[in-house]
Image (cartoon, rainbow, N blue to C red; front, side):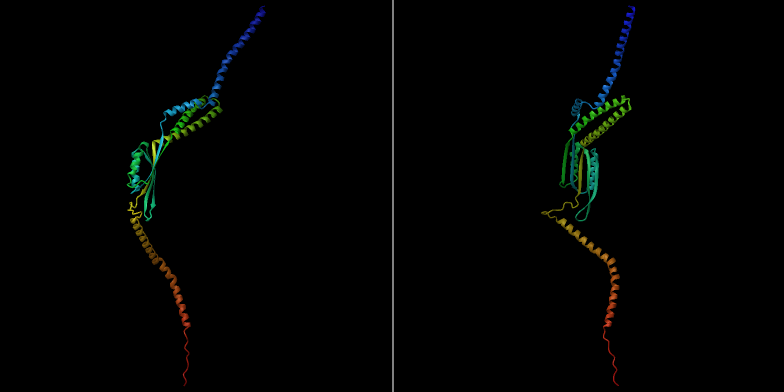
Length: 307
C-alpha cells in the first residue's frame, strides 16, 4: 500500500509540474505575440485611418482662412519711362513689396528716333493692390492702354494640402517610433526607406502651401511703360499735321545726308578710281586714233618740171 501511495504521489507531482510549466510558459509567449501583432499593425497602418483623415480634413477646413490670389496687368503711356520706373520701384518698396523684374529696351519710332521702353513686374501687399494701381496710373495723363485684374480662390487646394500634411506628419511620427524600436538591420532599412519617402512628400506639400500663402499675401502687378515721344500731336479727322511735317522734315534730312555722303564718296573714292582707270585708256585711245588718222592722210606726188 505504501508503495502504491508513493507511486501515485510521484505521478501527481509530475502532472502538477507539467501544468505549472505550461502556465508559466503561456504568459511568456503572449507578450511576443502581442508585440508581433502590434508591429504588423504599425507597418501596415503607417498612415492614419480614413476616419482620422476625415477628422483632420474637418479640423483643417475650420482653421484655414480664405486664400485668394489677386494679380493685375497695366499698360500706360508716360513721358519718361525710366523716371516712372524709379517712382514705381520706390512705391513698391514703401508699401512693403519689391520689384520682381525690370527690363529696359530701346524702341525705334517711325522717324528714326529711339526711346526707352520698360516692362516690369512688382509685388505689393494684397490689401494695397488698389492703392498701388491708382499710384501707377498717376504717372500718366493719357488714357490707359490696357488694364486687367484676376482673382483665384485657392482655399480648397490649400485645405487639401493641409490635410495631407497632417496625415503625413502622423505617419512620420509612427514610422520614427517603429524605427527606434527596430533591432534587425533589414527592418531598420525598410522603415528608413518609408520614412524618407514620407518626409519628401511633406517637404513638397510645405513648398506648395508656402507658394499659395505668399501669392495670396503679395499681389503681382505686371506693368508696361510706353514712351510718349510725340507728346500726343493734334489730330484732325484722323490726320496729324505735326506728325506729317516731322516725317517730311526727317525725310528731307535723310535725302540731304544721302547726297552729301555720295559726294564725299565720289570725291574720295570714285573720282580717283575713275582717273586711274580711264586716263590711261583715254591716252591709248587717243594714240590709236592719231595713228589711224595719220595713215589715212593722202600722200602728195612729187613731179619734175620740164626743162
